[in-house]
Length: 513
Image (tube, rainbow, N blue to C red):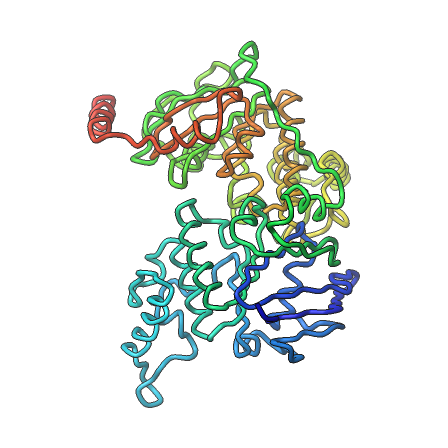
């Protein structure tokens, strides 16, 4: 394999922050090179310099042995350097072909688009990728995985030699990840160099040839994937010991029940789900994408209406019709989409911390007690080791892990006894994951009751006292910590209902109504 990209001595500073210092990176033809590090390590800044989003302060970039200056993203594309961002960049109302060639369409004369020519060229690229996607299909009709394939096709339409993938599997199912890896291997065989950025350590062994580690804006090392263990990579990433201990014990059944859910139903998303939660317990919810785990959480929290079923808190039946009702009953919910539902990104840490408890920080005539707010925020920041310059920092400027800590602080300020964590470590680096795990265990030890939804089986197995497994809206199994394995979880996660079961449930629901 010959050298494709070489970056040497790269520096980049922003006001008050040295983002990169003497960093380096190398990519060969036909190589998948993983770039890893904690949030804030400098990975994205490095790739933004390579793709022309940022201008380097110092250093050199070489493409196929020739030094280049990448002045802007369009210049990068013309050089054959393309990036696929974690948050896909497609126009949902346009077709696949229109998205692939947007701004570069074939035309009839100067005014009219030549849709047939664009669709034919799009089909050529999709066929080369062995992907069966109709070039005329609207992007909005495609799954996230298929939209990602369109992004790859768009990059290849520029005759890309270098393809940068930022967290490409974050929103994909296991079967979709297999398909993505097949395409990556096909591209590798064609000589395309791929930079693979991911927080999922287990993927690195499966797909990468080499791994470069960054930490605190500096280059740490580059290693051959086959010669290194994941624990060594993690050690290089964090430069410190991380918290890995989990609850290796079963539920303490002597502790009181704080939450009981009986026969919960909502269309075909939730089918007769029943479970309970003890004080001080971490109850894991596992299942494949679309199993109904998030829908159950949202129904309990009052974010979505449910058709039938009963909810009991501390033995008393409650009627939760809105999130306000849930919060009043001591339930806090950390959504899987924290940026949309968890925090107000444009507001500061202090405001976010007291957002769910503002009435406790104001008097009868509405005056806000700023001193009390700052004192409470200081307490939460210290308790969770939240990394923020000060309480006035806008939450959008914090890393994903620290944003998650602000949300937890919000619900602890509200003094919620039941906390629902939906994908608590999604998009969070391995060091921050360890801190979140430690915090969850401390909350459980302090008597808080936790429902944890996660698509990562090692996380579920590490953290849960019991594990509820769902498949297609049904609760198919409940496993203790001692009996749970990845194999047993997957057995229940794929236990599809028969037509007879579906008809019987449908009839029973009709009789209940």
